[in-house]
Length: 356
Image 1 (cartoon, rainbow, N blue to C red):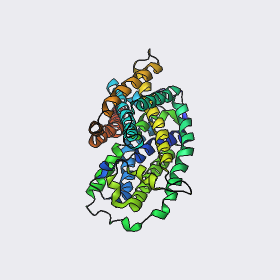
Image 2 (cartoon, one colour; image 1 turned 180 degrees about the vertical axis):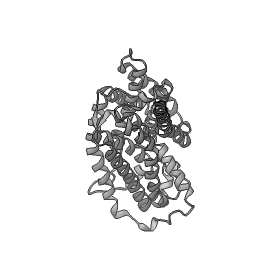
Image 3 (tube, rainbow, N blue to C red; image 1 turned 90 degrees about the horizontal axis):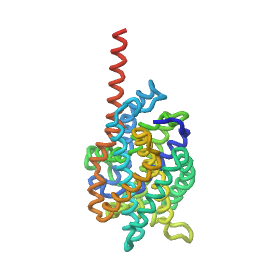
Image 4 (cartoon, rainbow, N blue to C red; image 1 turned 135 degrees about the vertical axis):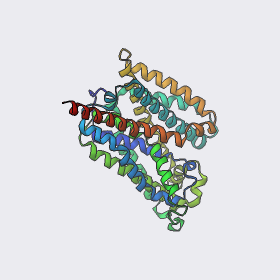
């Protein structure tokens, strides 16, 4: 990937934090129906472990090739299109989940297709502005998103009831580990890291651990309040964290879910904009004679058509938003491909050493 447009490690991992925060705040209760809520408070331990393991091949690759991106090392159009497909899939899921939220919670009796189209156009414009602009926007968004989430959680402290907590691992460890894998599968940011590191300056390793720790802390905190405030009622809500925000109160404001909705919109803009940008950038490498803006227009148009088809039925959205499929494609792009490249490069280096 071309490295002319670089951003700092702080901007990059802030962008990834905002991107992953969207997955957290748009959590669907159906994802963890077989796991007790209290188990979700210890699940982050497994998530952090898996997060470190999945990045090991990438770390070893960039330890030796810190100026060459993964796609250049792979030098395979099949791998190029693999990443494009994965990023397109997560773009569709991001917009579709926002559409489901708008259609079921915010405007339940209104056709939100126009909103869907406007959201995709806005995200496409963000992609057109470029990597650096998205990085700066992410930092500005974090200034609003992080205090907003802290404020909402702080107002819920008085509603916490520790009696809602149940013993952890009540149904064994296996369901918790499975949920940790599901969570990793939803973290397309691992694949983003895999191809973006040469475009990032500064202490990347430190930034990665800060990102992994903070986004895991955010998830644990959200589940703590959901469990202790709503108890078993959490599992009956389509978007439980939005319901949790609606229970927050401060002074004359009876509900703070409007703030929470704003967090959704900001995070969705950054995530979808980044994913569309990466697709256009990879395609531009394959078809260099075509300008990147035309790829953005094409990706935006296909995303609109795809999401309009998904948005017509909630069951269709659940079918497309498949946890096992996400685990597979995230595992391939974030772990399997880097591992394969690492093995091939090391084998080639050993053969050269033996011949010499």
